[in-house]
Amino acid sequence: MSTQDSSPWERLMKLIASIVLLVQEGSRNLKEVMEFADFFQIVKDRSGFFADFKAFLASRALGAKSETAPFVNFASIWRQVYVKLGIKADFWDLAIEYRPGYWPIVVYEDMTPQKVMNAIKGANLFLTWQYATDLDAAITKNDRDPKTGFYVVYVKASQEADPEFKNLSANQLKKQNIKGITLLERILLEVFHFILSDGQHLDIQSFTLCSGSWNSYGNVPHVSWHDGKMDASWHNPERRADWLRSRVVVS
Image (cartoon, rainbow, N blue to C red):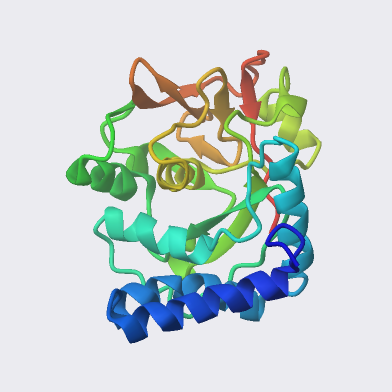
């Protein structure tokens, strides 16, 4: 049976056999092999993994572009996010549900917009700009807050903000009970995507309206990639535009 015809189970067994052989021959040490641990944990924990993996391979064979590969270990990516930010966060026991077409946002306890912005600057990840000196003081209302502990929400896996929400103001979204992303979640999502995509940024052509957050004047923040930096600014809650869109969150 050829490699192309072999089942995902057979491919996985060949991978395991190859790893064992590499260790036995001394060409790989145990520490290097343990880098595969995240992959094996996904195989163990995620029901329907091989069906998803097979579909992914088929899409790759057809030249399709996949925003979210079934074997991406999002817990591992989020550990990297907080390591990059210099924030001690223990995610080793964190199990994140895989949802096709969605990205998780892991908001660790006691995170704030300004704390994350300062960490991005301190780690020299990428350039930033913010409309207020202290975002924590400026933002007085958030639909979700990690003060009592970390939480996970999901947004569509898309570089640009959700097109179905174009020309909808924050006030309109609120009236329709659409749960929009908060400023903190959007800033964290930028770091997540930066790591996931090897240096790419979100909202190159659009602005994410952070309709889950409000400042003390009743205005709503937005975030985009503008002039080579992540730009955190704000709009009147009645402002509508094609390029100004929220990102809906689901729990």
